[in-house]
Amino acid sequence: MINWGWAVVNRKVLVHLHLFYHNQLDYMMSRLKNICGCDWDLYVTVCENNEASEAKLKNFKPDVHIVKVDNLGYDVWPFIQVLRMVDINDYKYVLKLHTKAKYGFPLKTYSWRNALVDSILISKKQFRKVVSLFEEDSSVGFAGRSTYWMLFSGLVPEEQGMLNRMMKRLHLRYAENYYLSGTMFFARMSVFKPVVESDISAEDFSLFSKTASKATNAHVLERVFSFLAPNSGLKNAKLTYFSGRIKEFLKRLCSIEFIWSERQKGIVLFLFKKRFPLKIVKQKCYIPPVGAKEISKSFAVANVPRKRLVIFAGYCPDGKIKDSQLYYLNGLKNVADNIIFVCDCQILPQEIEKIKDIVSVCIFKHHGGYDFGSYKLGYKYALDKGLLNNVDEFILCNDSCYGPVFPFEKCFDSMKDKQCDFWGLVTNCNPKKRQPEHLQSFFIVIKSNVFNSDAFSRFMCRIKPQRKVKNVIKKYEIPFTNYLKKYGFSYAVFVPDGKFPYGNINKTFYPLTLIRDFEVPLVKVKVFNNIFLDKLREFSNDTLDYIERVNPELAEIIKKENDM
Image (cartoon, rainbow, N blue to C red; front, side, top):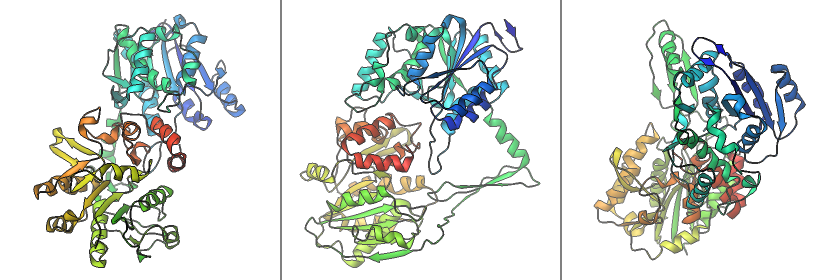
């Protein structure tokens, strides 16, 4: 038994590291060295042998156990295998870690991985505090980073069934409303006894569900782990660390100025001064890439047999048109006669070749109005050039989505007999923030009686540049639906609220349900770049797997653009 001030540890700690990305080993070892004041065994599982990693690990901890496992069940099945290799009665605690791919937008970082690991191992002091939490409060059984406890909701029906079956197999009851996302935690070893003694095997992770969710049982067990402590009569705990001290340090040392581009999180300047107050200044700053120019160009304008005109709002921060934008534009070309492509940025001249046979008009100009600013520019151009003449439907859409997952024709065929003046794919409302029900602006179809009206013209003309995208949503997206409704126009929605299983909420948080159950042709880019991480109710990997089944070409584009 060892007494080291804050806590008394009378048994070993089992540390499991699943090392899938070998280039992250140095970071992991820099954190593992903060384990102190106790005896601990290190088990490292790898999917492929790596002599350099093995040498580093043995130099770091000579008695390390390196175990080669099949690439199955992500980090969850290797963890269960390790638990079954040892006698769990020899350990009082278990610490589970694993490497993790980069996430984030516009710059991908290891912030998710770091937050989970650092909440336990940022320092020796933090590790001691975590163990003290367990030693001083015998009712604590499981702990992980506070900001990654997510509401237990959002599983699609089939996955909910898989979870129900897994809970029944392990003889567990639902005892928590939250689960720890990321499966990196510190826990009492005893709570994992049901998992160790269960009949869970490799076959549980080699099956594919109808939703094409690879190794879905790994995701199911991620939730199950958070139920283990409550089912043992213990409680879950949320871990934090000293982020507040950093701010206090900066208050004394310097002031901070943020140069915040309208759609580009990028530059942070630390300006050291004699005075100490913390000052945050946000100002508009668009920095075009080298060689980019403002370009407005008209190509061949088609006749109007389909009688549809599209304004597609985009953004190309590096001056290059993305493959996903080209794919989206080609999908629109199948349902529309003319496309006006408007970007809130400058463009490299050579990029125009990519779109000359797809769009009728392109306008690359920094205007600071986000998607609605682009809609305004496209609308004014269409009016001036008479492109709205003989048009029945006017489509406003933007590149905040990947698609089409399914051909747009299906969507338009479904809505052609709806008695309405304008329609969209999904609605959203937030009573807590006093946001009324409104069509989400990433895809709206407007009929001629609306876009030829004075009311519509007045709304479009009053759109102005905004400092933040939140202002655009507040001033234009949310009021747009009810503004037109006030003037006697009616609207419809492709995914009716009454048929959506999770209620009238932001449906884009359920991307798999939208595309699989309702065949919505678009899925938000934020699903895959980590922006929705704390809000998403369905796994991005599962959504991508389903897209890969129904549209492999689009899936490859998503993987490429998100390093997946």
